[in-house]
Amino acid sequence: MQFSPQFTLITSTLNSGATVERCLRSVAGQTNASFEHLIADGASSDDTLAIVEQFSKDYTLRLVCSAPDTGLYQAWNRALEQASGQWILFLGSDDFLISSDILSSVAEAIELDPSLHAKQFLYGDTVAAGEPDWKLFKPKHWLHHLRGITEFPTSVFISSRLFVKGQRFDESYRICADHKFFAEHELFRHGTYLPIPMISFQQGGISSNTKFERMHYLERRRILRELKRSRPWFSEWYYWLRSRAA
Image 1 (cartoon, rainbow, N blue to C red):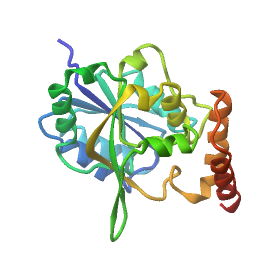
Image 2: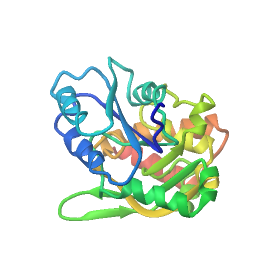
Image 3: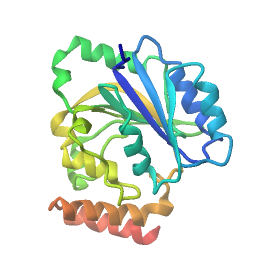
């Protein structure tokens, strides 16, 4: 009988040797949970693949490909072709699960509330790793609406039912294809918040680096245009100023 886990974690890598071990170690340490971890590599030339191979001996970790890609979202889409879990979590190669009971806590929440099975998204809190403080980010619905449907949580479990229907991430985006996906499928309407700090993300990546502020601005404006939506003028003005200053 083929193994069908409750969770599939997907990580894309490209010369991630400096950070991926911490990521893999946090997943390998998950207890009392049924899961698989898929790696989509972009043809790394450092020790990334050696680290992945080493950890694949310790838990259900599998390299699904190692080939040049056009970016993060093509890597995710490639891994989705081989995902078999009921819930999908995308975990950056420089991010990590903050404790060993994240997956079991989500599984317990689902068991205690069967209505969660019908949800498209389960989302929780995210922690920004920084010295000397760790900053907790809680999803804010009002902020999402104020910023014009382009702000979403980082810690999101996505029902695999969406991907069975053929949905994929728009590979023409470099930074915001996941935000477009969440906007199209109305995450806050079809999802449930779980008060669980889940993922710690490393400041300075492309999604949080101020050097990419203008790209963020342009891609978010594109989302609004493609979905025929808008955001308040003062919000648009604020983000335009930020993009100009970056």
